[in-house]
Image 1 (cartoon, rainbow, N blue to C red):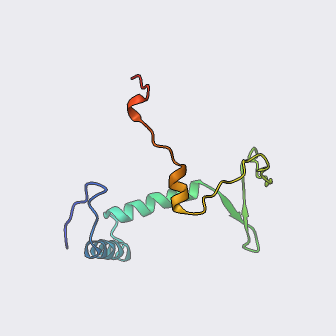
Image 2: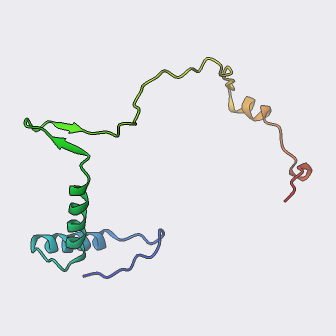
Length: 111
């Protein structure tokens, strides 16, 4: 099996590495290999999922979601009446003429 250590965000695994890794995990799961890392993580995830009853099933298998009693779900229209009218330039040249250069040497920046 290709052994590549991934240490940071710039280190991207190859497709071959991912294929080998997923294949090994699949084999571990199918063979019920209880000492494998993926098997341990699945068991732990199942324990957590059983403890968190975010939804329940009724007799007709329709999902009934439970929410926190203080949760507020409301829809409302947003009022955008006080926004300034948009100023669109007709061309790139017109836009670039409207931009004033900034002299950074005259900025008063106190650390």
